[in-house]
Length: 180
Ligand code: SF4
Image (tube, rainbow, N blue to C red; front, top):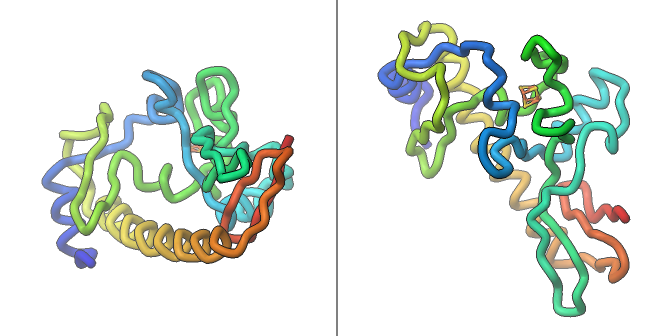
């Protein structure tokens, strides 16, 4: 895994300062505002806001079919309100800022096999503060290992799961949940 200091320097070389424009929380192209979120992160938002699971998340709309036509998906995403994340207010501010998921905390960056990927964002290309670049580097590394751990748990659950044939099955690191 890439070292935090090396990653921080890469982020600084790209340059980033959040413009608080809310573009990353708004649909600008097909499903561009789909924010994947996992079970522990949903629990954290529940703990911080008192909202219910259903008020926060919905099944990720990448639906697969099992051998007996069971429908299932491997992820949750934040609920949307029209073309915006349901947590974005009219002033383009995140109303769950302290509890927002790691994808939001690290946008527009992502780590793929220790390579830094950068998504389109008006905040890139400007001078990045040392402290902010360090925070993002630390959280990108945390996100990569957290997502890997979640994936391992999901694989294990998937291999031994029984699915509902009638409802949508969502497999997360807590087990199989059904909706519909
Ligand atoms: S949780 Fe907050 S930062 Fe993340 S997409 Fe929603 S409004 Fe944006």
